[in-house]
Image (tube, rainbow, N blue to C red):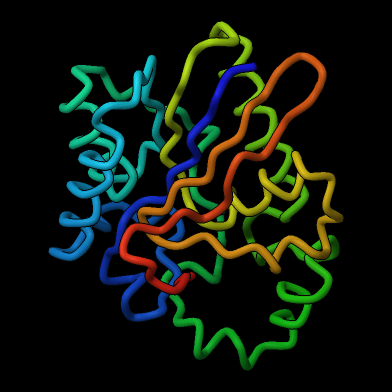
Length: 205
């Protein structure tokens, strides 16, 4: 079974201030995020990585860069690892969004939620789970690959591979610069760990 490290991008000012960056261009890691990315690369320096894949967004690519440098690997951009398309919710604060009626769907009935002008959670889960399986099909069972992505897609992927109902996926926490690992093969998947967070930071959306 191919071993997959699902890595959430490190901290940026949107994460720090509780704002949905979505797919906005130009959202870069802040100083703390750059340090997290460096620590992540140090932590995984001795791991025999075979490939590094990343969401094309800057904050994900910047998280992957120190890891790619330490392993002398190219970062391969994969749109399937992109952040959620939040549509009209993009660039809004979580504080403001919590006052909307749709927020209860996001938290307690995500099966029925589509972001206005954006994706549904079901679409995100299908996208990310198919992406991971497609990448694993390109590697041998002894390979280890890293996929740098975003909080909701990683949470939804873990829910899928664990067989957790979509409506319960918000019970999973994924911190900035955290590592979630699993093994994926022809006959299913095994979860090795969830949300290993450098520095034991509490999860931020």
